[in-house]
Image 1 (cartoon, rainbow, N blue to C red):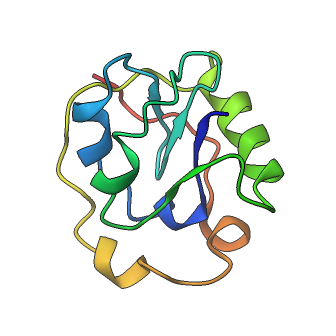
Image 2 (image 1 turned 120 degrees about the vertical axis):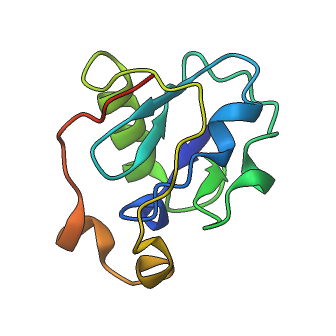
Length: 113
């Protein structure tokens, strides 16, 4: 098992989770975060820290796509992030919106630490 970041992170990009991760397995895209499943130790401390409830165990049904997205972008495409940053000013407006991946996902990297 590993944890994955799902679509509700898109355009919300709260970074509360990165500060509690003991193995620094979060990577930053332009408008979301992902978890490297090979680095994640399945401790689960990040899951309750996410204000958008976007972090889920990959054992939940229907998360295969998100395991692929997290794997692809955490392995060299996006930089590591270990420190909390200010969330986007409009994060609350996007929290809970449907279809965020199709409408807003960006493959561009973030800044990292």
